[in-house]
Length: 637
Image (cartoon, rainbow, N blue to C red):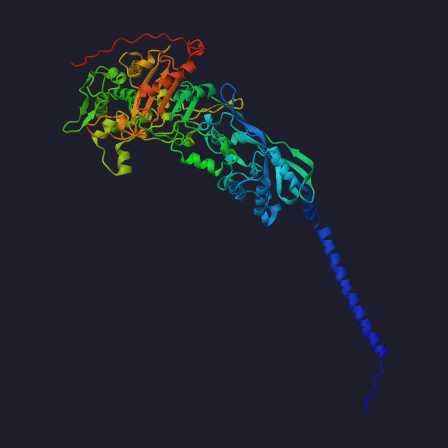
């Protein structure tokens, strides 16, 4: 029997529908309430916050890097300026994760090589601030700019920017003095003030570009700009102009620098000229040099490898970092030390048979003149550069006393004001030094060779120039410095070591008299140079051994590799009775201080002291030369 059919309960169904409708309405009301509550929270409670975020999406604050201060020589010639340049930048946040692919696109568009691609990535990966465009290709040509513009649609985050780039018009001629700027690296970025260097990608690396970085850099400016959704600037809302860096005016003379370089004649070496009265560095030459413009925007792998691996070491600053045995150039200072310490008098004589011998020691310490000079007094010892006399003097003084006097003249220490970061200290040995460094006793023979500037003793050409200036100033210390004016203001006077004060000031006359005779007495070692001078020069030659010569052997240049031959040195100041310039020259493997280095010194002095007619310039003062009386020579007595 079939089951009965149930009749539909319409009233029950209606109740169910009504209940569901009310639940649905309640649910909708709850959702609407939540929506209105959220809207209220966003529009009222957090109005300030989201208003600021909205404004930031439209308005950006962009840094305006300041113009770097210019650098001039003493005559107003520009040694470092800023030139307009177009560079290609990448903002990684706008490019997304595929920014390396963008670099590949740029290389393809501009038809560049694999080395350029590696250099680009290295620059982009360097530390930078978020959302800051990083320049990776500089000095764009018009064709390159056009190619980027045509392909801009597929290069998000890539932009062409106009900026000022450091430029050195004299190229390699001032690389070792003015220095150069380079890209800020990660270590520097951590130390720098992010506000002060916002928008700046370069910083001073060497020379006075480094020392005066805080003055050359200037103060950054800002502008508020309105941008579209793609970050492109639509209009400038507010601008605060940057303050340019301070210009530097140097003591250096570009013309004298050129003369000094030409005088070296392409040989490896160093020339430094100082104005004794002010300490101003007039010329600073280290040859060979390099073009600092290569480093400003980032040097290529190939160019850097050539400079780094060159046997001539063009990156090495010979004036400040090169340490060489000073050789006989220190003999006038040693003579003055002997007089002041009371060890000798000007009249004391030593017999020179061509060698010196310590008591109970077989070793012979040779004079450069193997036949000997006979009886030698102090004056003759200086102008003949007699080694035997100074062996004897050093032995009487002792190494510790000798060391203290040499340090007083500036050896064994950094001497400059604004190049000290790059200076080597050199070395003035002593008993204490040898015990501390080598754990060995000091031997008397080492004192002898220290007395002629050999052995452990090392000095830079800058230290020799300063010691010469101290001689010219008769003991007064004025530190060498590069900068004469910061803007229109003189620099503050730095602290200086104590002046070299002698018990008898006339001792200066004794040492300087011997230096004058080096160039102006017929038997002086540099008489050929001094005899043609229009003024009086006080100087001293020197030769620094590169390799030792065995006992009993003679120096034979033909049997020695060119780079193992002796270095040639010469120091001098002029005019002798009213010094206006002090010069130190070192010619690597030049062999003869009098024959090779002395002519360089005279050419530099002539350029500074003489006018076009070969007469002393007015500022130098007319100096009448009166030959000194013939020194007593009892040769062979």
